[in-house]
Length: 99
Length: 519
Image 1 (cartoon, one colour):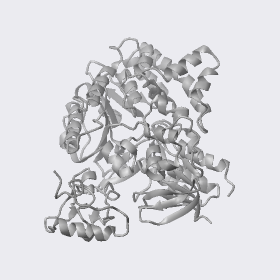
Image 2: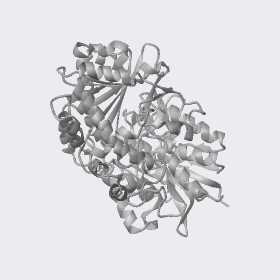
Image 3: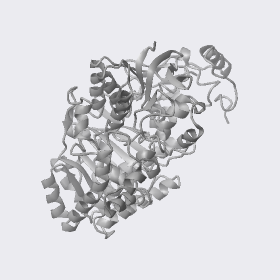
Image 4: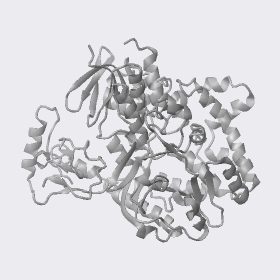
C-alpha cells in the first residue's frame, strides 16, 4: 500500500522534509504524496517516516493500492539510484520484517 | 568566483535577521530554508481553515525596543499590539490570582488591592536584585560577551559580585525566597516567577542553576516585552523577509542543506539535499550547534575538544503545545468569573505554586506525564480578531514537563493524556470549554525536532544552564559567533545571548561577519 494523506491534514509541514523520496508536495488544500514515488520507506526505515512525524495521524495506508515488499523495494532502488543511500531489507529497514 | 557572498542556513527569525543585515550592507545573500515557509518556529500558520495559529513562538516575550530599528522591523511593516494584561495566574481558589498589567499604575493597584504591600515589596526587591545582571547583559548584549569569571572578579563592589555569582549558582527558588520568605503566601506570584525560571531548563524550581533562567527571562526584554505582533508572530518573520528582499537578498524555500563544503580547512559553500552545490564566501548557520557541527559540517573538520564540547550540549526540553479552534469564548465561573471582564481571560495560567511545579518536574524526570500539569492558555485572536472567524477564537496551551524520552510507540498516547489533563484543569473553571472546542492538534518537542531540525526539539537551541550561557554559549570560549572553521559563523539562538524572538543573535552574527568583510 502506498501511503496517502487524508483530509485531516493541517498542512503543518512535518512530513514534507521527512520523506526520503521527496514524494510529498503541498497541494491545493493539503499535502499530497505522489504514490508513484512512495516506497513506504522500505529499504530505509522500518516505518513510514511521514506517519511517524505527522501530529494528527493523517498519513495512512492507501488500501486501494496494495503493493508487495518486493515491488516497493524495487521502486526505492530506482528512486535512490546514484544517490548513495544504502538500501537493504532487514528488520530495521522494512516494515514487512519489523518485529 | 563564489556563487554568492553569504549563505544563511535556516529562515527562522534569527537567520532572516542576519541575512537582512548583511544584504543591507551590500552583500549578496541567499537564505536557504528546509520548509516552504519563512520564520521557522516564529511563523503563523493556517492549521485549520479560517484560523491562524502561531506554531512555536507566539509573542515577543522578551524584546528590546532598539531591535525594531536595528532590524528595520518598523520600516517593513511590523505592528505591535500592547495587551492590557499579560497573564492571569491562578491555582487554588483560596489565593487571589496574580495578574500582570502593561500599565504600571494598574499593576500597582492590582497588587495593593489583592496581594498587599509585602508583595509589592517582594517584587520590587527582585527587580532591583536582577538589575545587577541586567546591567551586565545590557553592556554585553550586542557583542560577544566578556568571560563571566572576569566580569564577576572585576565587579565594582562585593554586592555586585555576590549577586552575579548567585545568579549563576543558585536555584530560582533560592532567589525568589529571598523576596518572598513565606512559602505559603503569594503562592501564585511565586509560581508565576518560578514557571518562567524553569522554561527551557529541564530543571525544577529548586534545582541549583535555575536562577540564571529566571534572570534571563526577566532582563532580556525592556519596555517592549510582551508585545503581540499584529497578524501573529509570523509577522516578525514576514517583515524580515521584506527587509531582506528589498535589499536584494533572497530566501529559497524547500531547500534543505545536506552538508557544508570544506576546502583546505575552510567552508566554501553548501551541498543541498538534491545534490546541487552553491559556493559562498561565508556561510552562517542559524541552526543549533549540534545540527550545525555534527550534522552539516562533520566532526572531522573540528578540533577534538570542540567536537566533544558540542556533543555534550544539553537539549532535553520536553513540552506540549496544543492548538485549538473554538466556536465561543470560554466563560470562567466561580472565583475566576471576573477574568471574563475586559477579556483578562485571553491569557490564563494555571500555576498553583512553586511546590506544585516541583512535583510536576519530579514526575517528568521519572518519565511520567505530570498528574496535574501547569499550563499557559492564550487566545491571541481576542487581541487580534484577524486571526479567527467572527465570534470564534484561536486558543493555544503551552505546558512544560511532557516526558522527554518516551518509549517508541507511546508518544501519541501520552501526548493525548497530557493534553486531556491540561484541558480538563482549565475546563473545571470554564464549564463550556470542552464543548466550545472545534478542532485540536497536539504538538510536542518531538514534532518540533522533526519539522524544524532542532536538536531535542529544544526551542532554546541549548538549555538555559549556567554551563551553556554567556561566554559558554554555544560552547566555552566560542561565544563570538565565529567557529573553529574559517568562513563559518553562527547566528541563531545557540549563540549569546540566547533564545526568544529577539533578533539579537542574528544581528550579532551578521555584525561579526561585517567586522572583517572585505568583499
